Image 1 (cartoon, rainbow, N blue to C red):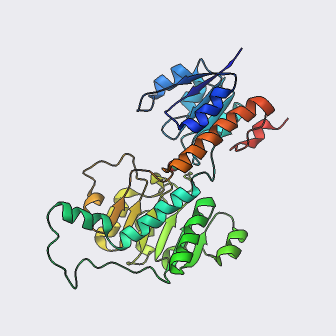
Image 2: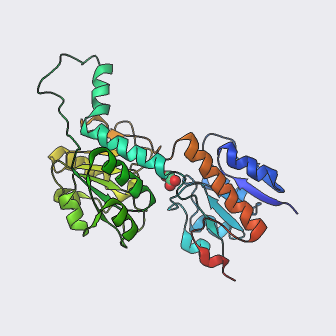
Length: 327
Ligand code: GLV
């Protein structure tokens, strides 16, 4: 019998073509919107494998109904939408797509940093509103980034790419805080490991690149922003729930920090009346970090290969829970 693969969204063709070449029966969900969880469960019940992404809630409830799945292949580097512990307890391998989007996401972090430092999104809006006015020798002033200190929270694949950009463009000093030290990156970037509090105290730009876990949930909150420099820029391109959004808005209004660049919000989607959207030193994008043609193609290929190799060789090249494949 052909293995039945449920493909939860319209993913780039590059990966789908690879699956089509194999002897699988594919079910493609072709609507723009994600399936509701009820729809997802109903569909997944009759399939052997699932290709999904961060908009699909693969939680205890889902897994209770779909523990028969042979593999879950996630189209994303983050997998906080999946209850990994539960999937592992049912012996379901979970694939993901690391590194494919590191350049793309670092570009968004780097771009947001400059955009916030120079109030770009806000100033763009003044033109649309007919408020260009006159050249103002003391107006619309931003910050320079040359020789400033970049603090990375989570110096992994994407954090390293962001640090490289900042070093090459602005000769920034790199400090970072991680669960475990990244000695290779320290050497490559001349980066210094610091305690979390020192990261807050010393960073001119603090860029978040960690995973969302119970330890990082809303770790950036009011008291934490208060410890940062009043001239600091906070960048989050990782996951929205890593920052407390109301506290972030308050911190900017009170002048605890200078501003923020977000590609992820808490919650998503951000509502159009969110006060952050009207602030001068704030630039927000709708979770497009991995959104380049190259990155999304590569993500779809990695996600497809995780399924293909699993059925061909009992091996998932990019796996979150390798312990389930051990004999
Ligand atoms: C996107 O947010 C990803 O995790 O790949």
